[in-house]
Length: 291
Image (cartoon, rainbow, N blue to C red; front, side):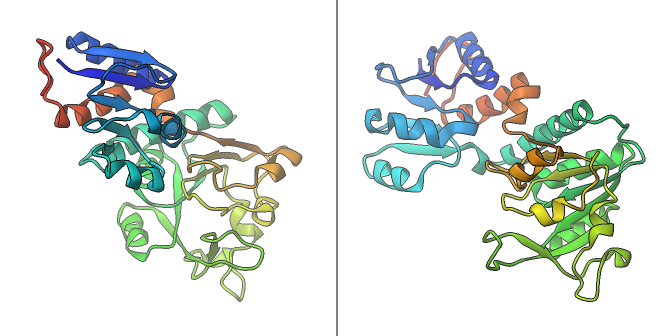
């Protein structure tokens, strides 16, 4: 029988607790460390680094820690002490399945925040990684007129194959830009570019919905000044996101940074994903045995 500690208040963790208990495991669920000789500790995805720093000194050799985005310096030190770290996002199949749940949550946020139907509306998806792909495909299936903004040319080609409009962006770091921010070049939408191939106001103003997945300041005050005042901006990049939120607040833009969407909109399904990863390391039977 396994002994597990689940930390964090989010709904996803609550369902994980229930699922492990239903399999006869000994599970402690709380928001702080309790001594108990655990086989494994499960941290919430959205705050793994926060909890890791709080419990690092309590971990013991042989224990497994599940979470994501662990502080590298802590992991390096603790691994030398015989502690094993499992990053959910690096496990086979998890990242894309989690991205699908994130995409559904982002669409739910857009519907709640907006005053227009999605069908037929111009939409911009910034970034075409896992979340961007899942999101763009679902928006297109709902009838949205989707444009993808991406710097990677292979991903841009994939977006075009998927039937999207595509805008190529190049990562640069200028004196007034955040490292990794994007400046647009070689835009495929000619009416939206000037002689320097940079997107102009005519590009940004066309979108009723803008979804950002890029963890860098890609929508700064200058670009936001051209966005429709009634546009819905949904940011699912990791905190602090990719928008100038001070500018949004000052100018009344409908922008929202949305974290941990699977835990908010599909906590049971999200917990099942976590359990699948855990079971790949601990063979847990319905009789309560864990190896």
